[in-house]
Length: 360
Image (tube, rainbow, N blue to C red):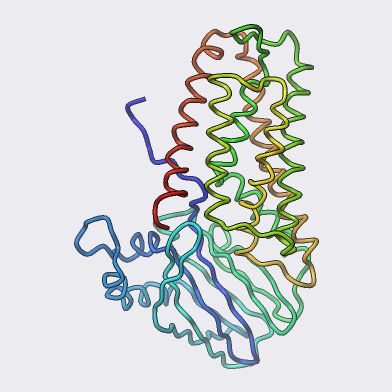
């Protein structure tokens, strides 16, 4: 309890890269989180833990020099000359980003574009670059970095399977990186192997009721966030991100405290559905960053959602057998469930204060 690490929700190391191809020319931009810029080139000159605009602007030449060898473009096996424009700051849901316009000129018309992306690969292996590549009406979304530092893309012949796979992978990565979504789900699943009798918890006698309890919670959460994710993706409903993220944190507090002071014991699926609607808007914020290709909007939405469900299933499959095996232990009923839930509620309270009251 005395040794802890920082727990964050919705703070993944992602850069946002946009490229638009016109013949031999490429135009676009790259956005890096200010926290990642600090990690890459060191921006906080006075070491006070706060990065000012002056410090960021002073680091611009170093940032350009850092990016130049780590983001390279080639067409026809010949490198394109990349130039970066003047630095600006763009506010996103998870903080401020350094925004750099970029342009590139290639020796020949771009039909196949080779992108080599090695930003932060030496200091943060989890970092990814989310690319939107457009050429006329063709739009592709690609995840760069990690095990695939180099990728070749056909500009005017985008591969549908690749886009589907990228959105599926993005959905899976988001649920694994979205600690707040996982903690909400975990808060609802921990009591699934128990039943409330009087003022205390008892283990279920067999696996059948636990299985159905888990199934109802996961299904309710899945249906709910799929509804609002779809509505948001098609621009039918939109909520301010600050409100959405704050309510998501509040939902974790409610679900976790319900395990400490049980009020709802047999209708956790209703809680999962009600708050799952809000979590869907949280998923939609990530999908909005990637964009949905106009020619494959539905397929990409399905792929992203399937990725989320695959990630959820993997977590449930890993956690619930252990919970079921431990359900008869006093430690599970008297320590893991109440104190674990209290810890989850405390973490979520910090997120709620940050998201609802502190400046972005």
